[in-house]
Image (cartoon, rainbow, N blue to C red; front, side):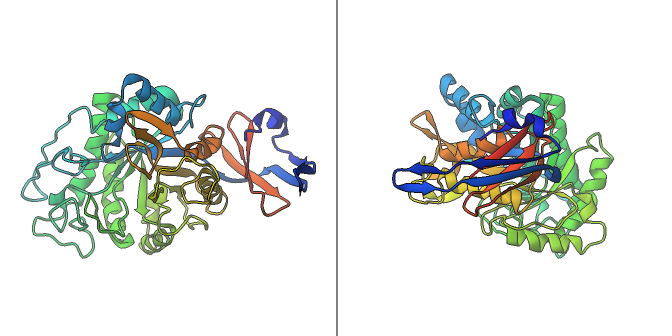
Length: 416
């Protein structure tokens, strides 16, 4: 629900809204009092978003034009879609585009960390260049482009491959005969920023160097403790600051769930000055939901979460299943109000898959939105980047409420 039209004049004041008693059939619904206090500020909001990594951008790109545009509008339009404002692009580490791999910009490495990387740029990046330009056309200056690596190329890791875990050579307990690859990896990430800026006129504002470092996966993956992350950050931050990309914000560390995120954060904070090298601390919602704050000076984003197990479901509130719209509305609400996050990202925006891993399903070349998409839209279309969450409460526990003061002075109120 957007309440901005009738709340515009209530900035910096206290507002109460009371719904009168209502009867539906034989059931009497008691009145509910909602209080919004715009004088009490909480966290600033950076936005809401998705990823189209692992060649999911290409799945959209290959649709017929009408369905292609429908899919893009469902994600990024503020008039007919969710108006999403964060796009999380994958940074490739694989040797080619086989299956759904993300190809590295330096697929073949030198024999040692002292060698020179040979870069390649295809102007496509698995469809992500095209997708980013389309998203920018719809979201304009509101779009945050976040580039996130799942792994280094294999030659920079202890196991010699970009999949199946392994750690960055040169970090704690990760010695390699080929040397310390941290500096080369930092320069590799910066070269990706440079290709996007110089070749494609796309500004990447946020950069992450790892994903789910607590897991060992058969796809592109890389393990890291908070201590090892601190070792990498000690090289990445000064290398960024010495480059033309010194204003790019560093994101870390993308743990699988909020509990693992707490553990990695504690390790990171135990290293002097390590926490000051990051701008955003990130974690996913899979293993433990974001329902408590992560105590850090950095902003906090929930950057990946989805119902990966359930079959495709377009219901809002039917059988109480994980993938239903009301379930995700509650997850977003709790992440915003209990974990004080500044960014909320679902895993995939559009995908040809029979599970609930995407907000929009491609079926026989036709795009079908889920109610999860519209749950996101109730926040993302009306809570714009730069908004501040303000105090909001309900006098009954079964009605949940949040409110946000946008930069233009309008207040959006969401009620569950």
